[in-house]
Image 1 (cartoon, rainbow, N blue to C red):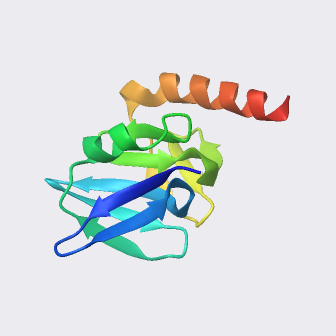
Image 2 (cartoon, rainbow, N blue to C red):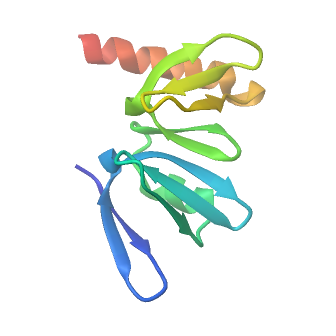
Length: 114
């Protein structure tokens, strides 16, 4: 279980990677969406989270989104490709990252089955 310490203004918040559904970039800030439905705006760029969270668990699917792959329920193959999350949210998959993500995701699913 990977823990992440998120610095806030006057304190720090410690969360497990499993609690994070997705992180969305917004300029120099990131909005962290949690499995309990709460969200938190943090003054860190998306790359900061990408460097600290486990790569086998999180995927950068768009320049503005980092997704916990455990919360993906379906890959929707319309144009544009998108991901349907367990909480009902639909996140677009960038054209540049599409093939890399889909290949990696399918390999990960096969590894879980074995």
